[in-house]
Image (cartoon, rainbow, N blue to C red; front, top):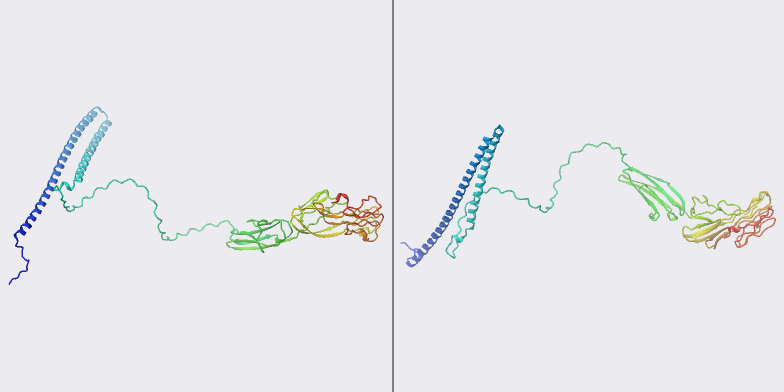
Length: 473
């Protein structure tokens, strides 16, 4: 037997079937109306376009007619010109003009056709762009159903190249590329005229130098080598005092106003990429030592010129003269040991008298002097020597005083003698403030408290040690 499931057969309700049929018919009718409207719109657009194309064709015909008329007039003008021209060159010129007219007419036809067609295309495109959905869907509150996408059109011609835009900002640096292969080896260069490469060598001068305090010293260091070495000076047991030394690349070393602290060894070093070489020099600085003399003066009057007596000594350039008195400017503050010696007395024509002459005193002391201080120095001169008769004069004393004449140290001179046959102690100077008298003949008294003994111009009387008033400090 055949069995049926509930609801497997069509619904037998007549009202339900009528409603479904009504809806289906309505949908078909609406669709038909919409298609009809779209078709009518397309027909209207097509008719409008045909009318526009017909108008364009009429305009083209008018243009052609005008061009034909112009062409006929141009040909008549050319024929008239041909009849008037008489040479071969004129005929050739006419042919050129006819060719020019044909080219010009061709250009005008092409330009007119191109302008007209571009105008038609632009209007057709504008009509389609201005068409909206409201032109196809006339019933209100209805949405048009989009149609299928059309096939892709033919690719248009490439447009003209646009103007060049402004330069953009610089981009980031890229990564460094791989190292390329090494290049070809170059040709060997010609030998130069320069000296051969060599290590540094050093020569110094002088190797040893001894000077007095306050002098200036100079050492030389000659360095050789290729490449040229650099030259430096160093103090072995300390550092160079930049305020009193000068060095340069030529190898020069200068030390100004040396003192005991500058006594040392100094090393000159020449250095280059090939190595270095060095040599030492030695400098010995003696303490300030100055010997003041009577500058070669004799008799009663003192010296008038320093001359070269103090050259190469510690006090060179520090002494001046004033009325026979030497004025010394102290170079450095410190303690100075001063030794003063009085001059010896004179002698006469007695045999061996020179051996028994009176001797001057010797005084030594240490004093604190200041830099720049002025010290007055008077050096005693030898007593008069009598070669024609008996008797002689006494020697002068030596004085060292400050600028205000306050004494530092004084040494008396020896006494004069007459007919001396041996040495007499009374003729020698003493260390008191009163001098001894002379020996033999009329024995004059010695000087006292810095005052010289009596001056005697007699030829037969001996005088004592004295210092004349011209030398008194």
